[in-house]
Length: 334
Image 1 (cartoon, helix red, strand yellow):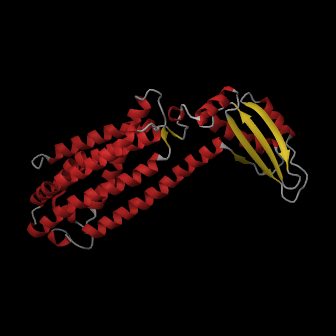
Image 2 (cartoon, helix red, strand yellow):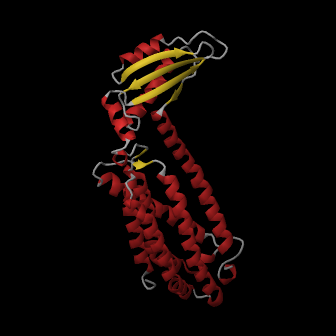
Image 3 (cartoon, one colour):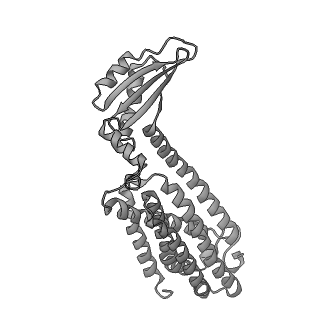
């Protein structure tokens, strides 16, 4: 590997990229785990409601503070009753400051049809209710939609904080610009490859073509990034120590690989088995999370830490330790 680092680096990168390609058609959502609910009162109740055309129940709150007269909902109510998705729409008012509509529809709250109905409900209210009237939808479908949107929005904030913090910490630790850049890029590629494999296993090859749980990217990313950076520090710290003593980059890479391969592999095996155990549960979200984390750990400990990182450090040579303002070569190694 030290004699032909370029070939090994290209091969390892190609494997990770191919594994990550299925992410391009990943579908995410939040759903009731009906197989896990089978045989429970909740599962039986959901099935009964769906058979009775009241699968979704949405409460629409129409506040009118300072106006004791109920909100004029006649046109809105008539339009809803004419919608084939709606089985019931009734209006109540507390006589003071709140009008409430209870809407029953035929769309299961965890499906794409329910999400579309929620969007249509807000658009219809904006058109048929009095101008400026607030419309607040409450119910299972609205709750699932808000939770999925919140998880997606939170992911980008967490992603930015974790990437920036990781880059700064590695920069200060190793006094190198390229090492933190490589670490961040490879960890992102590892997470994408893990989710690509997850997409294939559960969405493409799964019997029911299940969507990937929308909360998983946030959870899996934070777990995998923390573990991956641990392995990065173990390996690169050994390499840096030897390079500081000898100034021989190739020998330092070999030294680091020899002295960290076994502990990294053992630690990764323990974590992979631990998280892989979640796949034995009945809960689909647990199975998906366990598979994603275990796959990411295995990819990181084998392809990335044992092949890609050593090859890149061998190819970059003394440039591994370059940092603007600190010079290059042995003097820049902490």
